[in-house]
Length: 237
Image (cartoon, rainbow, N blue to C red; front, side, top):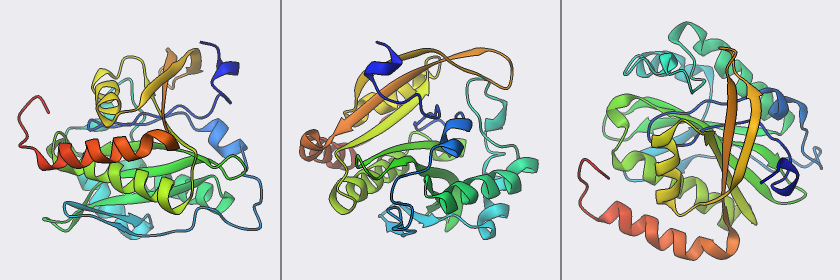
């Protein structure tokens, strides 16, 4: 499927229980329509296992420590900040928030009361009521736990029920197989693959898998996520 059929070639991001990171340029360049009335307002989303707090620099130390759990920045198919680059990454996300293109969150582990990752609404399109959930990563110890599923449920619920979105998008590197499986377990459908979508910092060419959940699917997806969170979990979940 061509890029023209699946919409703008937005910033490539990954979304999974593993980690994510994505392209940055298009998110920086695209300004949402109606900038005078901010669509994505900072808000706190609370769950049983995790809370999503509006990202600030006060989360820096906890995030710099969390990213060491698994040395996530070393995964070649993601774009996760190293501890030394965490300040710049937080600033980058806050600048995109100021432009109206992103709403970044710190993921807080409710049990430990500490940051364990980052996630965002990004590529906000107010005119067409669409957002992407992406630029997500979790500390390795938080992966394959209820936290990722609950965070996605919190973000999807706010997007569809509060923001009135007609579609929510997810993107990931074609080689990020754990991310792709995680997105598909949510109930998202593959819209297509953007081939040679981006040149990565390593110089390799990235093919980006584009998924979405549309508003008509949300009630069924919500029921499925609630079932996933209630069932006993095993190593393959």
